[in-house]
Length: 187
Image (cartoon, rainbow, N blue to C red):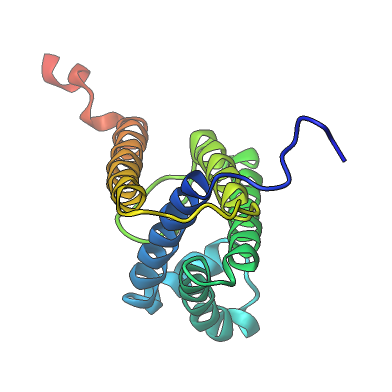
């Protein structure tokens, strides 16, 4: 036993982490399930063998949806562990492609987002948040104020996540389209 590491944590930060992670995975699952042909293209670019593409295309959104549901049930801990594993695996796949200089969309669901080291780091941070969601909680009951804080935290996290992704899109878009630079205006 490590004396400074508590055996259980206050439920508020754990449930904030669980709710934020569940929202992330629910969004990803819905976005991917909503465009299975695009998901299949992304998986092919990432190197999934053609024979596995049809199964992987259907399994991935279902797995992400399952994670979202598990995080909000008594099976929160296994759901959080699975979320962290998936986020780290996605980050590793993006890192390998980035290391090799491949320019591709992350395939995260939603609008295109170019793979970058910032995106790999983002997945590491999200995996850490998922790990917090796996922590054991103290027996303190949650009150209405706690649930209001969870709702506010999810709203804030969603806005920050969207803003961060928009910054990455803008930054990646500027570098991906050099023909749009002002130097073309001098002619």
